[in-house]
Structures are given as C-alpha cells and as structure tokens.
Length: 167
Image (cartoon, rainbow, N blue to C red; front, top):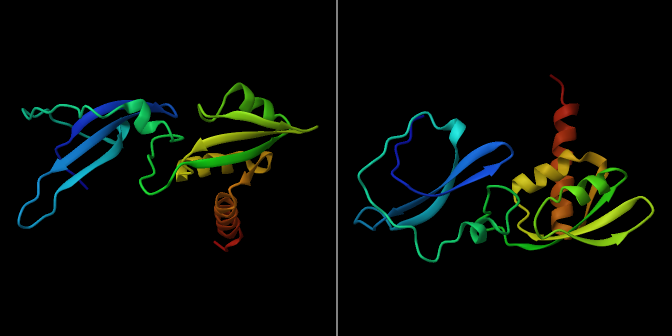
C-alpha cells in the first residue's frame, strides 16, 4: 500500500538500531473533515520513497523531543497510555545487566536481595516496553502495578497458546 501524506518532520530518533522520523500532521477543518493535529512515527528502513515539497513549516515552539519521548521506552508515545510508577524485579545475572544498561533514564534501584534487585521506573507501559520485558523470560518479573503484571501474564499466556496449538 502506498501512502502519500504530507508531514512535517519534527525530529529523528534512534531506537533498537533503527532510525525513525517523528512526523507531525496537521489538516485544517473542511466541510467534509474535522481538523487533525497528530504525530506518527515512521521507520526509515520501511519508507520506500520520499519527496521534498515546497511547503514550509515551523516546529511548534512548545515542542521538545526529549520531553515528547521522555516517558517512553522506545518510539511509541502511548497516546492514551499514562506514565506511571513501575517496579520490576531482575533475578540472577539479569540484575547486573539492567544495572549496567538501564532500560530508561528514570531507573532507580529500590531494593536488593540475595539473588535479585528491584528497579523502579516512571514511564508509559507501552507495547514495546511490555514486549521487551517478555524478552527477559523468567529473569524479570513485574512487581507493580498489578495491571501491568496482568498484561504481561496475558501476553505470556497468548504465547503459550500459540506454541500449544496444532499446526
């Protein structure tokens, strides 16, 4: 499918060895359509073609890329997902990996046990963050909030169902 939208490139972001452009879209209201003002993120390696236009724009004065992505794990700003306090427990060697390579700038050590460290974050638990937590398998456990814990359990259950289904 070819999409030919005009967008304003607000910033670039590197995440997981991929470059993304944060695109700002604005369309004034017409008789047929409501005004639209929103952002979308596109991976450069998925863009098949791009053309410069003569349309000029200015980045909004109140826009700050660090602030826009500040509560995010990756490239998903999470729209309706609110930032919240998250506590995870990292076991065995994973506790040291997370200590040396934090998942997010808000990471803080909370508590240490014989074989674990609890880390606290303040961020949006978006799908990319949840998927990353799942990638740690049994070496990372969500302690709080309960809603995120339940979401991870649901995702893990779906994975098990996929592998248990007959092919």
